[in-house]
Image (tube, rainbow, N blue to C red; front, side, top):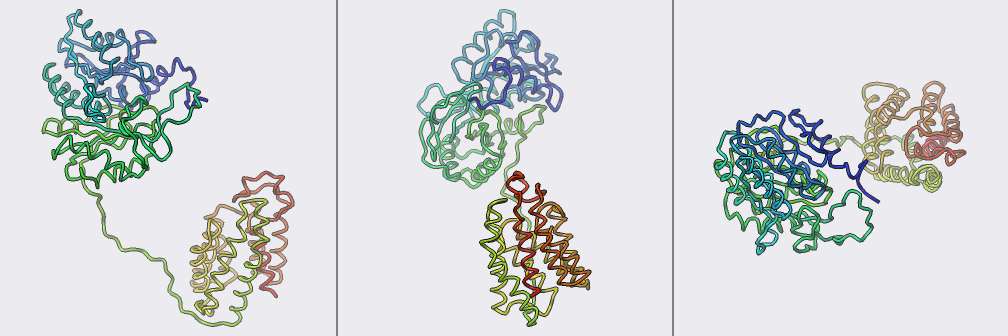
Length: 546
């Protein structure tokens, strides 16, 4: 089954170009309306008064190449089908469309199809009296002995430098020469843990790259890498790339383009950038470009690093503003900034104290929850994830431990409630611990401010509902707790016990849960099953009333 969104495979690239053009933030792109099979994206504001800079190649490398069309970079991009060079006719039409008396420069990645099709188009364009030059990017250093290194992500740097020269009115020979110099100053190396998926492919064959390994030196068309590395460790992989790259550039100052090949998460790319910042290159890096997709390979789970040896002209060129979709503004490299700040500690200062009556109430409530562990887990297994009993029991055991250690301020209600809230947030897992902590913490603060205990408990409930999002009728412990606390305030403890019991029982007749994990369970599974949290509340009220 294909893993791509598309409507018509034959129209995929045309459709994608339309999406790119209409969403370009500067509104400065057009598609030349020549033939559906000729896909040229050009600057809408081009007037042929300067040297044109044209690039292109197969689609699937977005934002390359059309994403680099705009003021300060490319004049036009010629888009082939996915991973396929554009035709000679398409390239020729692009040259004729945007080239004036100043001539044009073609920037081509070192693949046979691109070299031949762009080269033949250049020769044909000369018949029209046009001045055309071509440079070939061959930045991949994965195979040092290869006489024909591939052109990969470093191509974007050549686009930027040549585009800068053209934008500043340089002659064709000057633009060509600076582009060649850029080609000779760029070194790239990439790796991937998963290759790309081709649109429309329904192949179910086994993944080429084994789990736990990466291929080093992959191209941008999913072709196999030069070697296999037996790790996914980010630090080790950055070191693997940095070693040959550093050997290539020596001790020169560099800009580093950190290229996402399409399928790496933003979190991982940030992590890899951190590793780069601490690598053997750290003292040479002047600028970071990315991390971002610049020359991708569809959805390949991989990345590449491209190093550009800097000089004064290159530095000005890469930092100049552009109006494109895909270029990333270089960031001057510096270690992470930190700012001293005093830590905020939430530890509650409390003084242990004794109150036999309160001790008995706390012990009864905690022991009840511990004894209910299996029963509540069984109820929760029917309507949730089966751990409510264990969650409440874990919190209760902590309170028993503090009680037996004489560590609770039993004679200070405000401190007792707040300390219980603090400990439950720490030892109870999931949302239950936080919700109960909010309840006790808010109630304790209210008591501290002079509110009567029964009203303070209702204020705690109000805050629990506010932050948790549940209310009466949502089939949660609130269906027992709220009527119990209201009855406690209005009529006393016995009335609260009855209200809690009735509230818990009512949850068994509720056919839809409005909050919690039960909200994802169908009504057939809920029918006749009481909410475990509500049952816990009812049993605690019953226990402390005895």
